[in-house]
Structure formats: C-alpha cells, structure tokens
Length: 288
Image 1: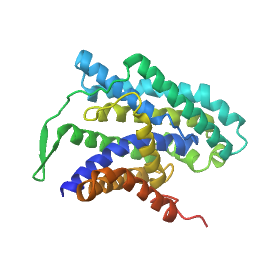
Image 2: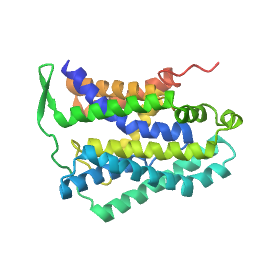
Image 3: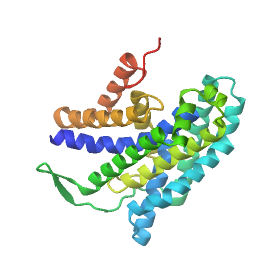
C-alpha cells in the first residue's frame, strides 16, 4: 500500500509535467524540447513570490498561467509558425521544430542563470506529514497530487465537452479534415501550444513546493514528459494520465524493492517495451 500510494502521488506529479507537452505535440505537431524550461520558469515564479511576498504557490498559479499562455503564444507565432508554413510534410516540421526548440531551451537556461543564478533553490511550504492509510506522506506532495487530479479532470472534460475543446481534438486527429469543416487550424494550433505551456508552468509552480530545482534541470523533466507522452499516446489526455501513474508506481516499486539507482533504468525499459509492443499508446488503435 505504501508503494502504491507513493507511486500514485509521484505519478500525479508526472502527469502535471507531461500534460502540456502532450497538448503541444498532439495538436500543434511541435515536439517542444524547451518544455522543461517552461516548467522551471513556473517554479522560479512560485519561489520568488513566496520568498519575497509570502504568496502561496496555490495562488501563484493564477498569475503564472496567463503569463505563460501569452509567452508561449508569442513563441509559437514568432518562432514556430514560420516553420509550419515552410514545412512540406510532417516529418520536415518535426525535425525543424526539434532543432529550434532545442536551441530555445539553451536560450531559456541562459536567461534564467543570468536572472536567478545557477544555484539550487527550494522553500518550505506545507512541509509537514499527513497520515494516509496509516502511513505518513508529505502534505505538499499530497496537495500537488490533488492539484494534478483537478487539472487533469478539468482538461479532460473541457476537451470532450466544450466546442473549443472538441475543435482542438479534431485538429489533433486530422488537421486536413478539420479545415474542411471550417476550423481555423493555425489559430487553434497556436492556442493549443500556448495552453500546453501554461499547463506546464502551473505544474512547475506546484511541484516547486517539494522539489529542489535549478535553472538547468528542465531537460530532466522534458525527457520524463516525452516518455509519458509516447507511452500514453500522442494527443490522448487519458493515456497521458494513465502513463504517468504507471511510471510513478513502477519507479517507486523499483526504488523500494530493488535499488533506488535503477529508477531511471526502469523508466526507459518501460518506455522501450511500450515502443515495441504498444507503439500507438495505451488507448490508441492499431493501424489497419
């Protein structure tokens, strides 16, 4: 039970990290390798507001989300939209986007080091134990899991119930057919990319309550998000949530039963197995 609960809490954290990348790649067809840096920016914002003004990170997210949305919208319109226009096929777009966002990640790291320095940062927020099923867990981690659950449920409902959400899903499935029914694909792609960045930044603000970070740790989160997106299926929120929980429980099991040093090995081994036997993701259909 301890492994299961700890793994689910960790999986909720991973879901926060991966949801934004799933939106960006699934809808905009942009594999954003600067996704982790946007998470660190959200964490820096929460850290700064809490240490300077004692503003709760749970309130900071309401400031971080719109600012990150605007920033990512500008990145898409200025840097990535020209790549979309000139790409002759999806493969060319993905290669150009990977190279561009890879360079962008280094630019963002450099700016953060210049602005905040290269030291690790952390702060104490809700850092007290709470008893769940007879075992103690950090309250900040439990709150992060609850935030992840609320965000995942809200995003899932919005994508499946609202008109705008269903239009985004249509673009993710087939941009060509979406144009035939009057959907403005470039406009929705920009919005989806911006929304993905906002979700990622919110995730950074939440997990900053219990993780120690620095300006260069974004690449680690990008890799974990990429594993989860591929495991769960590109553009599938349900798959992302399930993949995050599976990865969290799997890593916790390996760390508790075998060796904590093998958690990364377990993550990539699971990733390889999914690519070999279920490349379409947990809920994807096999190509006919």
